[in-house]
Length: 292
Image (tube, rainbow, N blue to C red; front, side, top):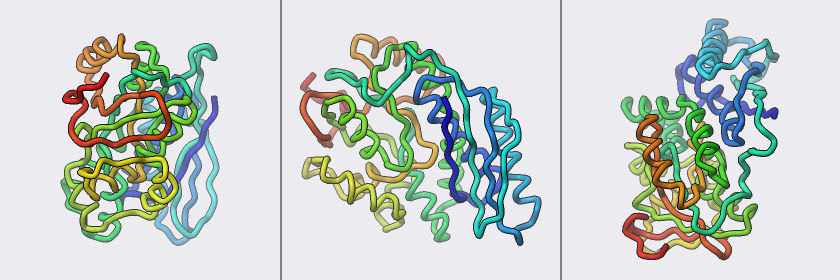
């Protein structure tokens, strides 16, 4: 399998940016049940930018690739008006065990492996309104590889998997239920968000991609009246290097959750796949719901 992704900086530090962009590019391989082994750099850099900035971006990407067991075998760079960086990522997978968006079935439990809110946090940072601790938290999550989550999805027969990136949680879930011919219900209180994200969303630090997601995918989503505006924004928030969303068969859920604890994989059961069409966002927590 071959995939690629690159984007403009979401943080100020070039080394962190390189790590985030590399983790994000590798995520598509993990989301399909693959193991990446080779990558190529894609770097766009302004001619007047200090040479050490580009070097630090590349160093960050190579360090993250090394953590993933991936060899970066060169790449390509061009001049551009603003920096952009990412990878072409190549991985291997068993064709008979590929993870797809279209494999979810009614009864599957939806498990998310990273909190939401990187979009609003990065926007607050660009506007000089983000707290240092909030930025550090967001960077740590964005740099985290989805390797363990992808492997555990295979080991626990997850039928539908997607990574959460630019379309936000609701956009990528919409793709999953349409591909699977199913519907989904989420429980707002079970969905994790970054510490400062609610405040940034409430203050209007909302990226354009999040607004676009809401305009495009909003028609497929029904919210309970008590789901407030801030929660709705965060569910549409355009993510960078987000987690995986796994549709775990109910008979495998207990084993999956136990293994996740043993392997230190962050995990939040946030909803379930149901029959029908569209997505319903309910108040409360999944574990408190009465329907199964």
